[in-house]
Image (cartoon, rainbow, N blue to C red; front, side, top):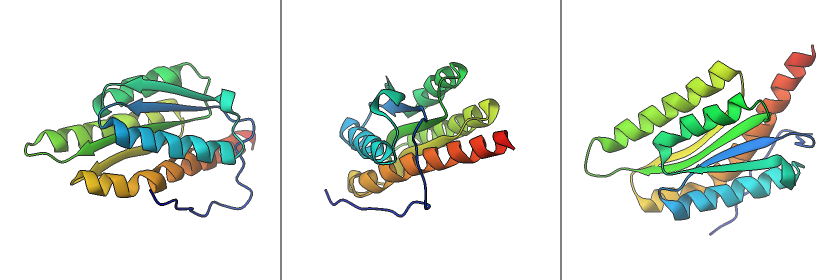
Length: 156
């Protein structure tokens, strides 16, 4: 798989941040790749390995509940949702994609906690495979950047 680097804002540092990751096991190879990319980027940004928590759930529809439990713990500065929904022959794709995204957004707003949504929604496996590395990196960058933004706002 090709490594892709994405620019991050100057001075982005995750030192001292605690980041929670909720990963759906469905489409395991894809979500494992998302996890690896996100974890590597969090470490590169200075988040300590011990400050990265992982919870795994069966699929994308279960992500909001796991994220809500993590948010309620008040342990995390940001969360990351990792999943992969690939279109099939039924309406189920739209249901899972829409409801997981809605639930993830609701949890973040209800708890005023940044959640980077890295649930891939693709037409096929090839599209998902092509997006794994970049989306994992982006999720880590978004989580750290938004955690720092909220930290700055809370300090002022």
